[in-house]
Length: 135
Image (cartoon, rainbow, N blue to C red; front, side, top):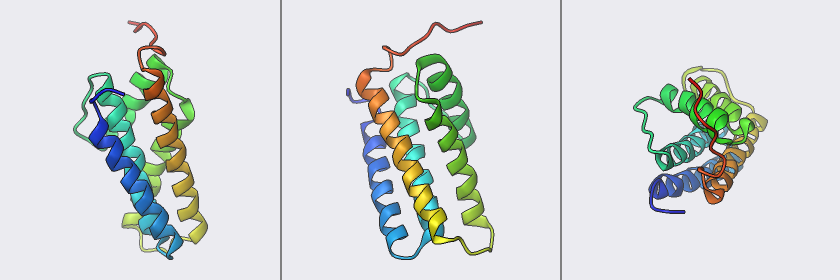
């Protein structure tokens, strides 16, 4: 992998490790939040690789779906899980209800799948999966 997105990918791995620690130590809501950020930073790394930057979380999620999944062959599951993690993070961060431990564990697992899918896509080279843009 070349230099684009390396810092974001490193941050993604750190967030995933933090999410695991939080989950393992009884903090499922915080694990969900860190899980989302692990997936988010991996998504930013992938977008940087294709020369794209978005200023808002919703913009990153939409760009992953369109530019990476539809146009460049990223595993569609990664796009769906990224969106789902965003929604779960919002609930975990802003709703007063307790978060069950299994939801935290599921978020960590889902984030790991997103990060792995993006790492695999990056190592294959995004240009390999590129499809022509349709008007």
